[in-house]
Length: 187
Image 1 (cartoon, rainbow, N blue to C red):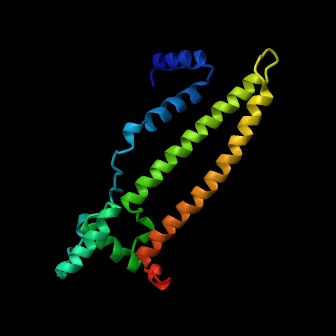
Image 2: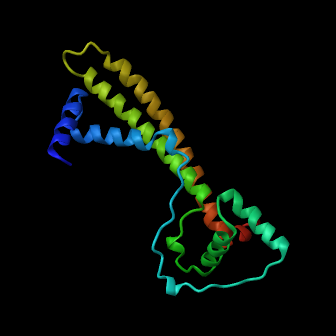
Image 3: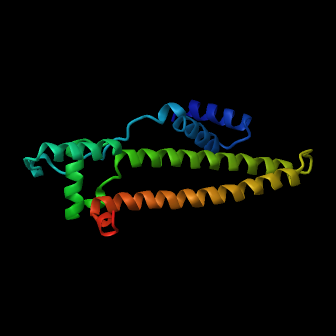
């Protein structure tokens, strides 16, 4: 960055009672977490091999099989070809570690991540308020601020724990789906 820009960022950050780094982090988080970004597509990983390494395979399937593939691929945001390639790769464990979750699952994780970041920002603001209340000249009541903050932390801890369990189960179910573990468990 140019020196003039750095100086302007420092001026604005100090005026807001923040360091350059925290001000920039807040601005970037606000920009990234803006609701208008929720529907942006998740870009696939590029560069997964050389074109000469790719070999076309043609498979003839019954119309009902194609309809079945389309039926299960659409809700998870995949095309027919993507679903077939992913199924084959998972079955062979060929580059399975490089596979991403299905687009629908990945989009949900992105939304959850944004929610957790917003929660973290709120916690950060509450801690700043408690620090301000803890200053000798402050007229703020730290006991009132800290009490409600600790109650919210307990609620958030429970919410984050149940969300983590749910997310873990969802991802486990998707991996199970692709590896046929779901069939072994009676699905």
